[in-house]
Image (cartoon, rainbow, N blue to C red; front, side, top):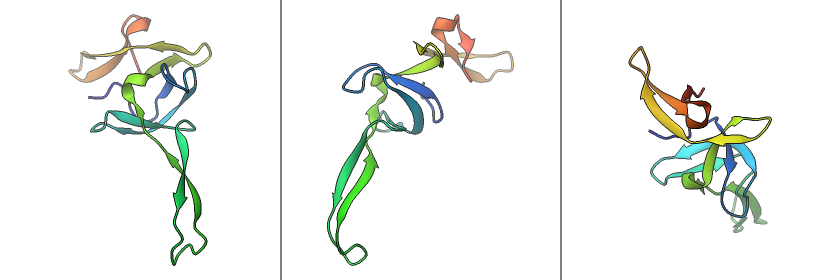
Length: 106
């Protein structure tokens, strides 16, 4: 199970984009990385072909390692937390925010 899932608001804790926040667009568990909205956007050069005779540039998202991301639990203050797992009363596995005294994460 991933500790960060699609739709979560995250904060980057390491690297050139340190301190930026964004929404997770897609998680790539096999690569242990995620695509984050507005972060890691690069330009790819396109060769001319029949469909596009001029060629040009195209915007692509570059995945960011999950180890560089932290889950944001309070959007106003930007407070982040680690995530754990536990079983609730129904027997379902739920995500818990460690800094919020193991309160469930939506």
